[in-house]
Length: 293
Image (cartoon, rainbow, N blue to C red; front, side):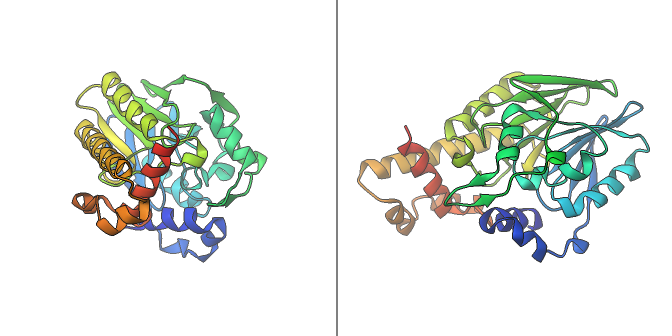
């Protein structure tokens, strides 16, 4: 899975690894979702766009080397200008094209996305350089924001301390499509970035908020994975809850994370493993998250 492999590579070893990728081999695939909304796939997080007479709103922009290809894919769908670019969170596989697209349209995000992009990260897990000023969002919000374009209410809703501390899901109300960002890894173990303020409880609360807010038949663009439904959110929630209880019980028995891995305590969820978050790393995340409570 190219999306997953690229995400794993760039988070695990840092941005210099981007130079080792043959970006000429990446194709941008566009899929009509519903109404005015399309999903674009390439390498990195899934992109959402709304197109119409008023212009284009772009949700996430993958990696910097792909920006011209993404722009060309949008132009093949619409000859209208890009009016706004929205980031669902700060990770580079969703914001790498900001510098390119920021010269075309204003970038919009939650307050914490701008803070994290501007500050970068230097932790034992990884180092991320601060983004250049041209890549920073210039319009930020705290709780929610709505863009009125193409007959849509493009609603960005903040989900606190979920995948990160700056997550926003984006609901295209008329088309009945929801972009979940990386709050949803559909059919995959989630990457919960605790170093960026993420938490298991935040993801679970985010799922509940989404289920209570949007129609039951909404079409969902996940941060990674195929087009999804509310049932996929429910399945992800059930998996997370069960895995957490399994790990909690193992901790109560005095087991270490390494013993849990040796015992394959999450073996029944092997199909949820992927390139960056396999069962072992998911155990590490749950142990660390539980230790913080």
